[in-house]
Image 1: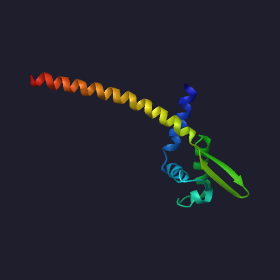
Image 2 (image 1 turned 135 degrees about the horizontal axis):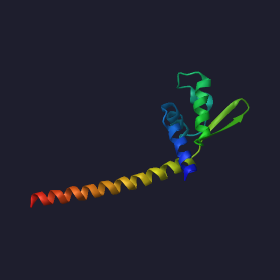
Image 3 (image 1 turned 30 degrees about the vertical axis):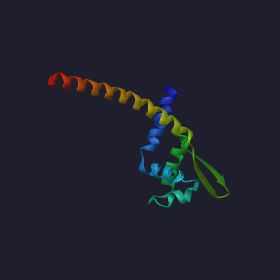
Image 4 (image 1 turned 90 degrees about the vertical axis):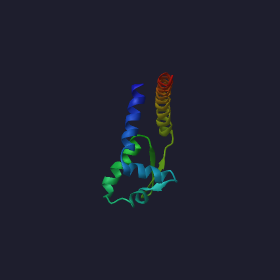
Length: 113
C-alpha cells in the first residue's frame, strides 16, 4: 500500500503544476515533439525539460528519440490509479453526505411535528 501511495504522491505532484497539466492536455490529442510542447511556454528549454523529466519520472508520459527529435506520448495507466483512488474517495464522501442528509431530514421532520 505504501508503494501505491508513493506512486500517487508523485502523480499528484506532477499534476500540481499548470505547465505540466497543459503538456498532458496537449499529449491527450496525440504525440508531440519536445519543441512542439515547449512552444507555448515562455521559458528556456532546460527549464521546460525539468517538467518533461518529472512527468516521465512519474510514468505519465514516455519519450523516445529518433535522430535529433524527442517525441512524447501520454501513458494512460497511471491515470487509472488516480481514477481508482478518486472513486474510492468519492464513495466515502457520498456515504457521509448521504448520512448527513438523512440526519438533517429526520431533524426537520422532528421539528415540524
